[in-house]
Length: 209
Image (cartoon, rainbow, N blue to C red):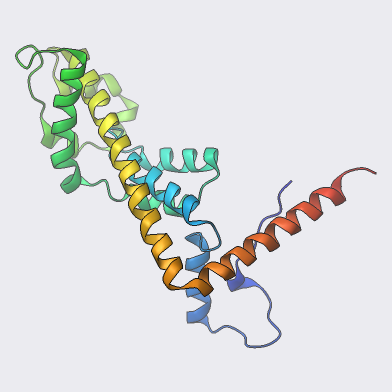
């Protein structure tokens, strides 16, 4: 079983003890995955951004934590990524996704008319308690199934593309930062090796002879 890693902000130091401001800064950087590779940090950010643009409004936090745990990514980075999905950023994406989904599924704009976006953008988490009633209020009773399907298919495709774009952007910026600050990259690699060696030695010690 993997041992819980304690942040450097709480480790005992014999010399040069950290002041509370420095300790807080170290804690925040550790929570943001400073000791992880740029690929894993960028993957966590991209996953969070993608989730933030999915139509599961009200469930983004739970989805980000669950998928970050499943893929063993940094949960803080993933949750922060979901914050990119807000009403101002949904406004141009969701209508385009709805039209995209409608076109992919082969529905006509006359049989599947536009949605009430203001009601959808401001829906509350309580919709999970009465989903059918909320669906009728948001999507109407006419062509309910095609409307819901068009929204979910189209926005999910766009959210996936946006997530990959966020991953590529974050990875480029992190690699550029590591190039300009090689000491940071060297220290992070050294900490990863130390953590890996400690975990490997603990796993060997726990095995029966």
